[in-house]
Amino acid sequence: MGGLGTWIPVRGHFRVQGGPCVQERRLKVWSTPSTFPSFLALALAQPFLLPGLAPWLCPAAWTGSWGLPLQPAPCRSPLCPTLTPPEPRQAMEGEPTLRLRIFDLNCWAIRYLSKRRQERVRLIGDTLRHEGFDLVLLQEVWSEQDYSDLKEKLAGCYPFSHYFRSGVIGSGLCVFSRFPILDTLLYQYSLNGYPYMLQHGDWFCGKSVGLVIMKISGIIFNIYVTHLHAEYCRDKDSYLPHRLVQAWELAQFIRHTSKAADVVLLGGDLNMHPEDVGIRLLRGWTGLRDAFAEAAHFEGCKNGCTLVPDNCFTAKSELLPFPLGIRIDYILYKAISSFTVKCAELKTTMGRAPGVDIPFSDHEAVMATLHIQRQGQPAGATLGTADPALADVVTEARTEVGVGLQAARRQRYSSGRMAVLALLLLLLQALAALGTLAGLGTEQPFPKLSFCLLACLALGVLVLASGLHLFHTMEVKMLHGTEDQMWMVLRALQERPSEG
Image 1 (cartoon, helix red, strand yellow):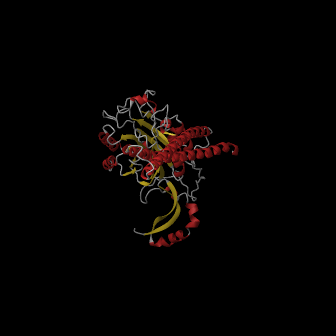
Image 2 (cartoon, rainbow, N blue to C red):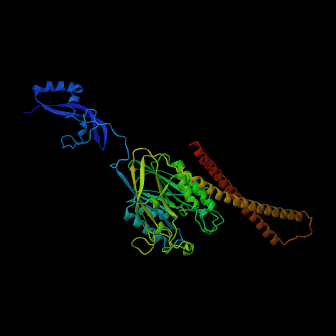
Image 3 (tube, one colour):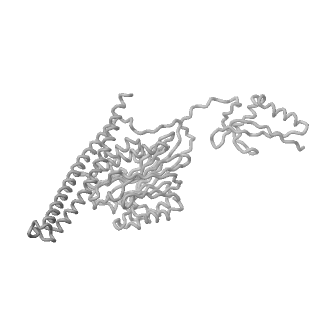
C-alpha cells in the first residue's frame, strides 16, 4: 500500500499571528508509482488548474500546523471565489488592549529633615513590590542612598530604573519600570527660585524634568517625570513667574522631544491647582489630558486632592483656605500616532498608606490604570493649538511673566547700585590708607581695627551684591526670552484663524 509522496507548492495568503501574509506552503499528495507522472504533470500545470480548484485549495483557510485539525478563517486569497474587497481599517474592537498601571508619588524624603523618612521609604518599597505596578514615578528622593535601597529591594519586580542627578543636592526624580528603558534625558529648568532664600531651598535642588523612552508591546512611550517650584504663599506668590517659566519650558520640552513617540505620559508634583494659569498653559500647549478628569472610575480623596488635612505630615496652616485639600500631583497623557489612550481607573491614598497607620508622604499617591489600543487612522500630534481659548491662556501667562520681569529688573538695579556703593567705599578707604602711608596725615583718622572691619564689610557687600546682580541679570534674560517666545506663539495663534 505504500506509495510516493509528491509535494505540490502552493503560494497564497495565510493568517499568521492575527494578520495575513504571503507564504508558500506545499500540499502533500500520496500516489502510487504508476500515478507519479500524473501528479508531476499536475504540479507543472498548477498555475492553470488552481483557479478551478480554489474552493478546495483555498490556502487562507489553513491556519494551523500541517497534520493538525485546522479551523476555518476568513479568506483574502485572490484564488478564493468568495473574496470581497478589504474595507478601510478603522478602530477595530478586536485589537489587543495594553493595560498599564502607573504609580506617582512625591516621597518627601529629605535627609535629616523629613519625619520618619527611612521608615516611610521602606514602606514605599514594600508596597511597590507587592502591588506590581508597571511604571513608578517618584519625586523628592533627595538621598541617593534611599534610591539605592529602593533599587535593591525592587530589583526583582522592577528590574529597570533610573535616577536623575542635577543641582547641588539632586533633582529628586527617579523611575522604576518593569520594561526596558531605551534612553533617558534630563532638562534642568533655567529659573528655580533664589539662592538667598535658604529657608525654601528650591534653588539648590536643581528642579528638572526627566525623560525615559520605552518600547512596550511595539508602542513607543515617552515618559516624563518632573517637580516644579513650590508655592509657599498663594496670596503673594513671588515664585509665580519662575513656575510659569518652568511650565512653559516643560511644555516646550514635551512638544519637541515627543514627535517620534506613540504615547506621552507625564507624572509629577506640578505645585499648581487645576485652574491655575500654569496647568492650563501646559495642557493647552501640549494637548495632554488629565487622568482625573478622564477617569471612568475614581476612588480616593474628594476632588482628587493630593494634599489633604487628614495627612498627619501636612502643614495644616497651609490648607486653611482649602478645607478639603488641594490637588497638585498629576498624571497626564496623550496619544500622538495611531493609538488611543483611556484612563480606566484612578485612585489616590486617603491620608494613610493601605494597611498601616502612617502615610507614604505628606502627599497622597496617585495610581492610574491606562488602556492603550491601536486605532485605524493615525491621529497625528494633537498639540492643542487649535483651541481658540489657548491664545487667552498664553496672554495671561505672558502678563504674569512680564510682571516678574519688571520685578527682576528692579532687583538687578538695586543689587548693582549696592555693589557700586560698596566699591566706592573701598576706594575711599584705599585712598585714606595711601594718604597715611605717604605722610599726608599726621595720624590715622580711624582706629586700625575699625578701619579693617569696615574694609572687610565693604568687600563682603561688594562680592554679595555683585553675585546678586549677576543672578538677577540672568533672571532678566530668562524671563525676557520666555516672554518673547510666548509673544511669537501668541502671534501665530492669532493669525491662524485668518489663514483658515
